[in-house]
Length: 219
Image (cartoon, rainbow, N blue to C red; front, top):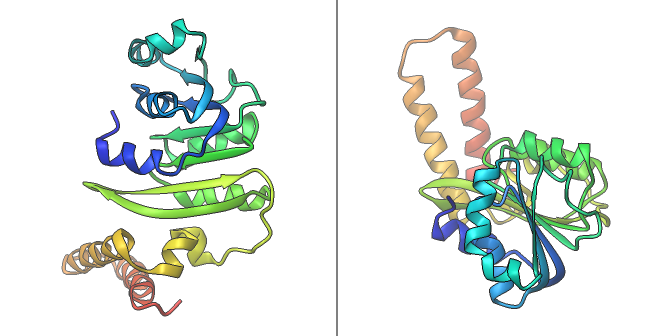
């Protein structure tokens, strides 16, 4: 279940559109936000789990009865019409999100919130010619990345640091991302106080040096 902070952050990146699709919709809160605020005319919700999909259908029953909502039990985008205007995929691993789009299609507009492996999502999107509109880290207990983009218009090359951490984070260097880097450095410093192989120690020191450069804006 998405917490209120995550819902608010995700929904803040959703645009008004004609047909909105929420893939892996969980309880359906983001779709409720879109329909309730008149930000879409119709919505499609999907989940690979029928019981999970039923939870969202219960929340959104009035819209389904009104013919404004379609519910599809499917894997990823396989049951979603390519004609939808905007797709949300939140709460899955980055590798899974990239594979979902590789297997099916890249939506015209999308908002993605990977739980891990965000770098794989960025590499897939940039390599596919997509335009990443915004890409930032936010905190809700844990740290999460949110990537918003469009299927076409990607022209700028990404640096290795931007692939790893997100362009907006690297360019701004502040906010929740800065706190994420600070905490990550502290964790590595703690690990380095333990016994380990010289090879592992060298890897951790290299990672720590990289984080320090980012923290101090030397990238």
